[in-house]
Image (tube, rainbow, N blue to C red; front, side, top):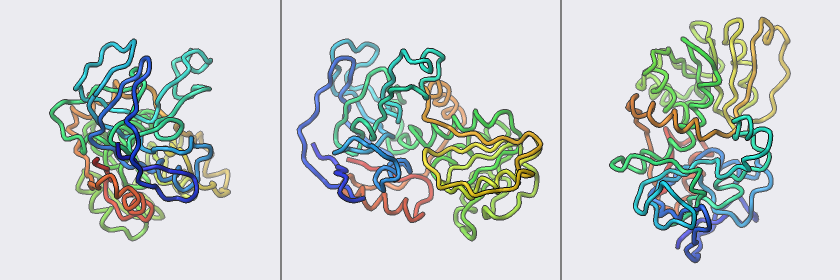
Length: 327
């Protein structure tokens, strides 16, 4: 099979022909139809997340068909379409798993980070951590839902009840979440890079009530703000944009350092919280909601061998929506 490999020598993936993997007990072999390019992949490739399993096949927004099931697999059949997310396996017995907070598991495995992912023709996944997906849908359109959608949705849930929601960084996650929030009657305020009129127009086209630069004040106080851009300097700006008792949710796995800010910006019971990974329950709630909201993803297709180009376009902000690799 063809795969794009991170060797660790440089922030560059290498095309390789590898033997097709075989599923072990409780695993499935999946023929990849599409794999989204997530900012987390970029953090891994650029060395901003430590200790990936090397050599590594990245990619954790995987849509594909079950090619083969391993011993002990039930509930999945050959030819069925499934999605593989970031959370690849949990221990099932640590205190966090016992509390139903598997996203905080003490001994997890992550797709495209500590186990091989979907920048390839085939991948192997734990059968307990894949999601059935619509058979008739476009796999490229589905791919961003597997992380940008799921993590965006978890961030949204952690924001609490809102009527006015700010989204900082209007990329793959925000363009999905904006549609979910508007479906639920929430007023969305989009904050982009200063001067990025194309992103602001994109946000307004998806129903945002207002769109402007991240340094601009919102026209009204927000109930909550979610930060998807990995820029720590946005945290103080978002704090100043939310009302008393409001919440700022940091939705990324990696962020630059948060600069010092006056305590007055945090006072009045404002909160800063982070989001870690996802749970399978998030997927069970999210996918039906995305279908009900008729979420439409904006994607740019790249052949698998052009994965480095897709990552570079994401790195330099040349994308609206999400990049997706197609084997």
